[in-house]
Length: 74
Image (cartoon, rainbow, N blue to C red; front, side, top):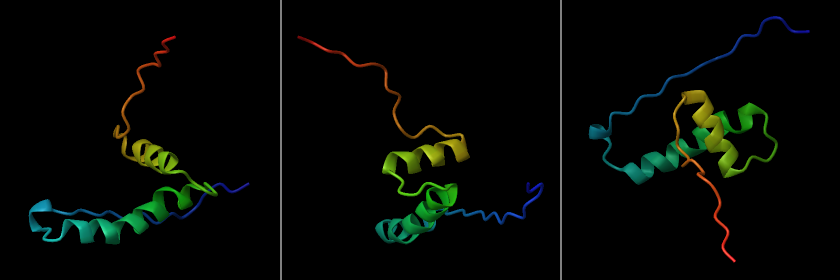
């Protein structure tokens, strides 16, 4: 049983007013974020939804819309 573990944490801050090429920023950061929040969480083959749920849990921020219910009509 492991009682302690060293874990590296990194912070990233981007001030949007200094971003000149937003699509390029997204292109560069997406694989890094994916690696951290999906693969590092131990999910073998994560779905996009699982990745977003991991980000929501880690940041305590709601990203996905709440599912209010399913209406069935006949």
